Length: 266
Ligand SMILES: Nc1ncnc2c1ncn2[C@@H]1O[C@H](COP(=O)(O)OP(=O)(O)O)[C@@H](O)[C@H]1O
Ligand SMILES: [Mg+2]
Image 1: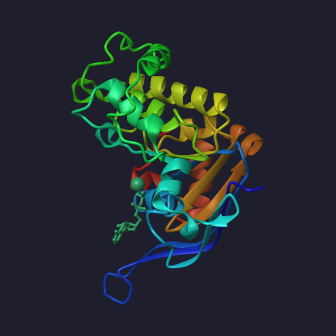
Image 2: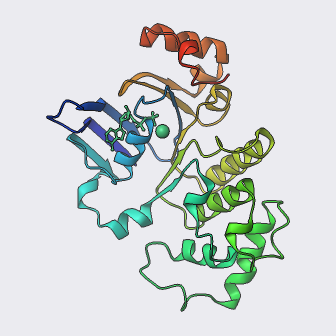
């Protein structure tokens, strides 16, 4: 059973106009349960478009996306929300600023159930949330009534990650989710990401511009360039490489120098 299968997926923006742009060219990709794939590539390579297509937010111009061996087009928005979680670069995008930590967590635990927030805030949930927030080591477990908007970017992103995984999704999509954080906080959120993925045995995609992270984390590495997968490495192949070797491989495969683009940091 595949979790995900992309066949000849193309994504063309503004087709037929002078601004026509083919963001995804011919993507073929299969993901087995529990695979944790890191994705690197330059600015405009199509990484976010790929995640949006996989999330079912964009229908491919041609080709098919299957989630759990069923065409993604046949899932309702509610089903897609149940099965796919996404975390963005901007910590503000994953939670509601005017709601408290516990209200946000409650909403996340109701995701896809169709139930409303007011009917769901139960006493017993508070204890569970306290335990889950305590493991973040952010000293927030006694402040669950605090508004999300008052937290730092790192705190908020760690909670967003907790929210994205509180009901284990079939697919977790991380789009440069540590890029806006300072290096120390980025590392904390990265470690938490790995723990949650391992513990809940999630299948995940993580876009990152940090080559070290792309090598260190996950068990497969994809390199995307101008809408095409130019390299697909398994765990042992990628772990044997240094960041410099990955950059050199990119230049070799893409026929251009990554250094010029200054989009990846080693
Ligand atoms: N909605 C859109 N309309 C037109 N062009 C788009 C749209 N979204 C993305 N693009 C273009 O598609 C290309 C890939 O974008 P994106 O997937 O965001 O790249 P990445 O995430 O790798 O930086 C870019 O050239 C971008 O300008
Ligand atoms: Mg992007």
